[in-house]
Length: 351
Image (cartoon, rainbow, N blue to C red; front, side, top):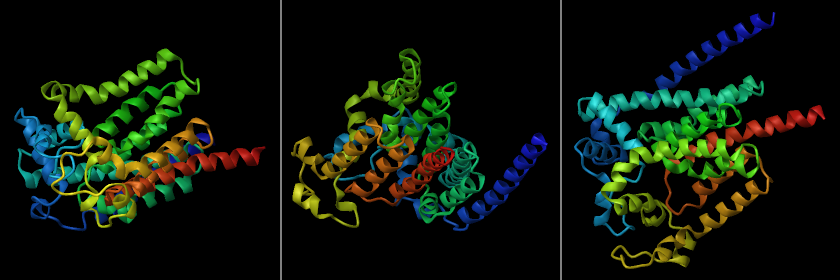
């Protein structure tokens, strides 16, 4: 009887997500945007150009050395894995921008759907199927996710990989897969770096041996550093500056300039002689809030998934540079935190 119930459940789940996937496909592709919409206007165009540079043996990170680390000129600020990934899609697309956009849109759709499925699996593990399905639907169809898809942001890929990484993290036997997936997520978009302290907890909380933890960290850093090695060797300064640019860029391009930005430091478009400390001042509230969040994790005041949610929320709401895709991350992290909360409530009822 148990096998029959399990078999029926799998059939129901497959049918449910097939229907959901078809609806998501209809919604995602309902806006017919051609290449002109993105051409020299949105990040995907400049990311595509950076990927083409890699294809031709050029270093796309070198261009940042021409700037002042404050004004944004569409620099390559993601890790190399992302640009290699785009270069592969570009090669499959025969370096035709129109075809590239079509193929990349399909890739994003599958990761968009996969993120919802992986989220459902987190709830499925604690036998909360209906809540898990609702969470998956909420993630896939909320306007921030749809907005991210429309502008062809890579967030859908990075989020799906991070959610799946979190799924394997709690399984000690297969935890190494979690570290690889986390590295891949960072390689696509490194907003997930705020989750890094979670991947230190197995050694900090004495859950893993030093040997096992060391091997897992080696897998994580290898995933990031192997694609980056040629570019680091070519020009380490341009690579490091490109990674730091998110911390030093001016918030002037944002829709709102908050008061503490003016209180802490006033940006001048021609300013290029300030110290790194002066450039980092507008991020001071973000740093303080992030440290407080980290302390709550290390002191075990909050569960891992709750820390993940709060840390991403802090980044989104305290960052002086405002981008809609930052909010895209908040929703899935909030839903993931419900897994620990639901599990905690179940334990309390048993007691």
